[in-house]
Length: 341
Ligand SMILES: NC(=O)C1=CN([C@@H]2O[C@H](COP(=O)(O)OP(=O)(O)OC[C@H]3O[C@@H](n4cnc5c(N)ncnc54)[C@H](O)[C@@H]3O)[C@@H](O)[C@H]2O)C=CC1
Ligand SMILES: [Mg+2]
Image 1 (cartoon, rainbow, N blue to C red):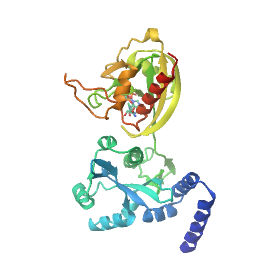
Image 2: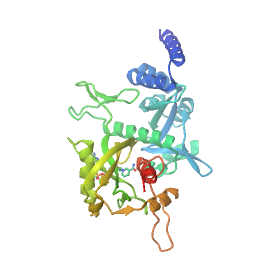
Image 3: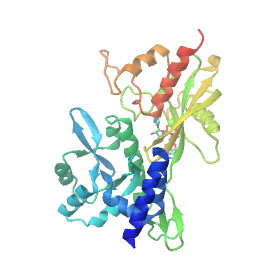
Image 4: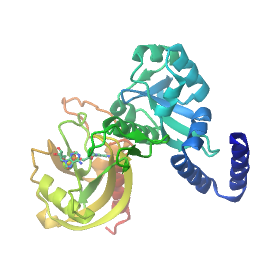
């Protein structure tokens, strides 16, 4: 019966491939994997895996370039066997995407194994995600960010907050269920607004004390319960730099894994040029400054890493290309150069 089902499913998938765009086919396939544990189990046995160790992703290096390694299901089973782990450990993994050919990608945390043993077996290293972020390309960074957020959520939601009983994840990891009362828990993200403020000719960038030396970014803040995005933008700009927003508009959004899992909603905001004196809230920020177009253009040309000048101070540098803050800054530069003089 199972074989007949698989044959029918393969035939149906084949028809899908012929009839639908790659994107639609992938989304439908991922949806089915989330809904159907049996199908997801099959996908785990033929998919590829991104490995983590206590939430540190496994990276390999070729020359000076780091990349997130994909391990095949058969290779993973070999490693599990070697380290005396049950093959069933594959089912602890979470679904994080699929290729254009509908080969599923999973993430698995091997925190119960000895870190150095896996590193020497697979010739790579488990690296803190924050450090890895600056070394990876956008695609790898996006996948690892989603993977870490999901793995962390499962790790911290193992018990039902109402009954105290253990919750069980579905195979794909898109939810957890408390079987005592059938409460379903879904992975959560916190909405965060990130705003690039301009006074018409300059843009406002700020840094927290925890940022690497010399790095500045746009203002960011979590949405409070009950707020609209517009209200969060106005409140955060007032709270952090003491300015009143005159107008704002939405640009784009991005998932961000730090400190937990956030949906970064990126906006541009204008303040009145006559009322642009910054009053930094030192509880939130270390510094906030207006930067000219020339200063920002020069910083965009620099590598995203600390660079000490001759006078001992650090040059301005900006978040890496795929960070939404970078995109906001690029958009602002473009707006400035298309504005009438
Ligand atoms: N992608 C990017 O380029 C940038 C991303 N960010 C991210 O934006 C996020 C928010 O920025 P912050 O200035 O730290 O926010 P924030 O200005 O709201 O201040 C953080 C404080 O908000 C409170 N808070 C309220 N709700 C919270 C929640 N759901 N989770 C954690 N804390 C909460 C806490 O007291 C926390 O200390 C951070 O996750 C940060 O990593 C920040 C700058 C640039
Ligand atoms: Mg903030």
